[in-house]
Image (cartoon, rainbow, N blue to C red):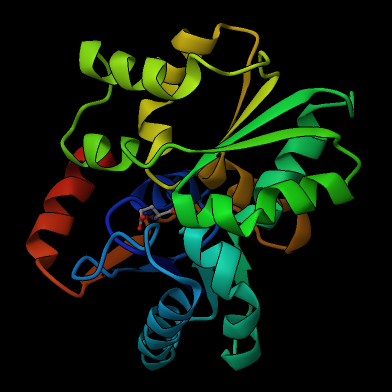
Length: 246
Ligand code: DGL
């Protein structure tokens, strides 16, 4: 089976990494819209337009299934992509919510969602979690983490200052922290240290790999998978980052 993985840029490599680790597909086609990243500061119509253009790319590549690694796209364009795709399309939000359900038994647990401004504005996570009966959900846009990760800043004083900037006014101590942006798994360790060992970190990539295992009858593949990288700008840079991150 050939799996397509779409992201606004390089961040979706964190999701690809989990998918490769789960060994469920023989072939991967990764496409990052690096010419137009970030999506997280754009409006709904633009995000939908760009996502539909990316869908045409995956149709040409004849993928069997498409994973939307980007939380922002998952928040705004999943339904329209599904309606226009001849193959199944999965987003990371349902998977993240499923992972929360699997790991938090107490519906009164404090859940903090950190994401781009657009994802937060959509309230997609909050609505889905409320529907599952989780009552205490706070969403916070932490957009600065995106360029920091792209600069290779995964820990240290500068990152800690950004944590203070965003989290010092927080009124509760989260039991779960949803890393609702492709880039955030790369600072998971630093976030874990900041919030303390008891906070459960929910990682989109791991969540979607688990959802695929649970909901689709996919068997583990022993053979080495092939991955092809495509980007709307500077594919060499994407390949370089892939070497580092994967
Ligand atoms: N991939 C985006 C997400 O997961 C983050 C980067 C962007 O803003 O495009 O929401």
